[in-house]
Image (cartoon, rainbow, N blue to C red; front, side, top):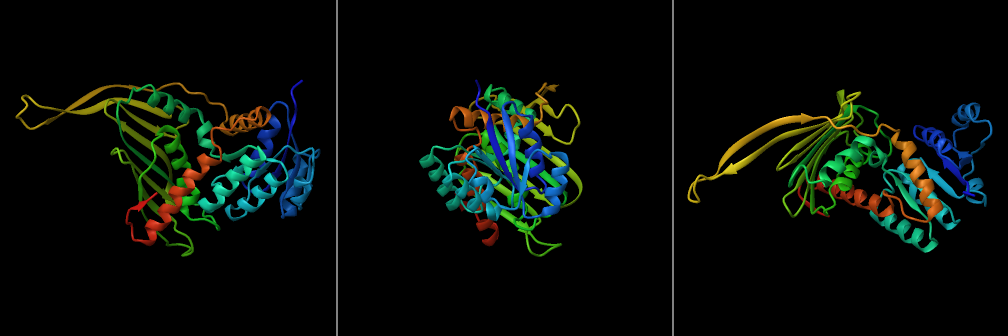
Length: 337
């Protein structure tokens, strides 16, 4: 008989209700508690899920021996304290991105999870998204050839966050995708960012991640755009991929376009030769990414195996975000990771 995994969710704001809904859809998984300091948010959820216990005390979840795992969907500054308490009480942890507000905190959680033999999972949802999985499959097949660059835009009007800047809110998504599809270790980061509307947090930013082998990633993120864009372009020596997440269908296009430099004789200068071929639109799995992720987490808790986006995966994203913040303070200077 398969053991049922019992989850407690902390945070009933924007993301928490999505976690509740999806964990309840996972086979052999139940949600016993939902915790938030805002009673009004709890009342709204209680009308949908009257069988769940709603509380303002996280200790109710930590002390419940029937709870196997704790899902944390709260402001970033609270992630470390809540995750640490959960691990100390023998719970597996599912924590919203980014894992923590510093790399030091992330390392401490990773060490504690290892000591307690518990799963520490970071909610980088895009890694479980059908189009992103398909893009990785295409790259891993070698169809693109040698990779040249990764270029992304993630811009919209809001939602401005109170606790983090636009790097930590939006760039975290694309950085998680980047490290998923490209396994080499990043070398340096340079970044620029500006504050306009609120003056408290950077709302518009550009980030460059460079690798020692010549590969480079450019990310543009903004809360101050009149249009919503979610695009990634990945160029290789043979083909190029264009991913537009706003498209309702056919989100991925693979272009058989490239540039070769050809010499007529060894003494001649190399001249560019432009090649153009078909455009392919591959089929991908359209199952809800968060449901797939929740099921993966539950299976990992049951089997005792780390998830794809474990604590170490989350740490790598935070290290780049920290480097970006340092680069901004140094007026865009390159910062070693």
